[in-house]
Length: 328
Ligand SMILES: C[S@@+](CC[C@H](N)C(=O)[O-])C[C@H]1O[C@@H](n2cnc3c(N)ncnc32)[C@H](O)[C@@H]1O
Image: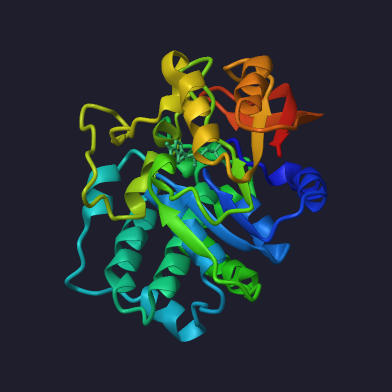
């Protein structure tokens, strides 16, 4: 949700016109913008306050050479007699088939045996991606048994194990070294030291129009899976076993503008690039005015865009104007 993947060529065009050698992606999400920046040869730092997104960034942005070998992959698939069955017990009848759930317990029981922390991040990233592909519409807001969808879609037909094998290979092909020391941070954007970045890219969440743009609400299963639900609070009264959501000021009308002002002020020493869209709040003018307080030259680039997002009923598309607000 909110991924800039389809806007990457446009972002690339804009970034190419700016002069920078070091960059921060302050709200890295899927990591696709950071991956673009890494491929442009700059030194990249990512940050996100969710654990699963930080895991994705460590696997592909910070990691330069580690991959999960075929031997390691087979090790991850071994069934150990002493393994935990937490996923199977907790999500039975909610998501996936019993076999899929057992598979997740199985892989987790073998992760510790991997030789390097990056191999673990990569294995987890492949597991996360397998889960998204296998889940109807890729979100975890309603209980969904993939077997219900008999329309032959390949992603719903393959088991989690089959997806996982494919994704391990996809990740193996995606790791690369851009010759720089890149880093992936996991925390609140306001705790990132604001120095050492020529450019800071900001893509915070929007204030929701309805109660459906909370990342944790949609992706709680991925967040839990990324730490085997250790140290997180499961809301047991929720049918889909949601997690308590972390607070972010960007998601509330009251406080969002002030949060943007603080954000711009914090990173005022860097060129600022803010992604924003016409269905967001605060209004564009208010954001431009806030950036003009700390930047001498502020330009707005604009293009039409359609976001695709799943809901309970169907996949919806919303047409918006997508903005890049650049402050120098
Ligand atoms: C719109 S998404 C970013 C999407 C990303 N650019 C992409 O293309 O995939 C916003 C991200 O901000 C993160 N986030 C929200 N509040 C945050 C905060 N206060 N500090 C750090 N990350 C935060 C969310 O976890 C989410 O991944």
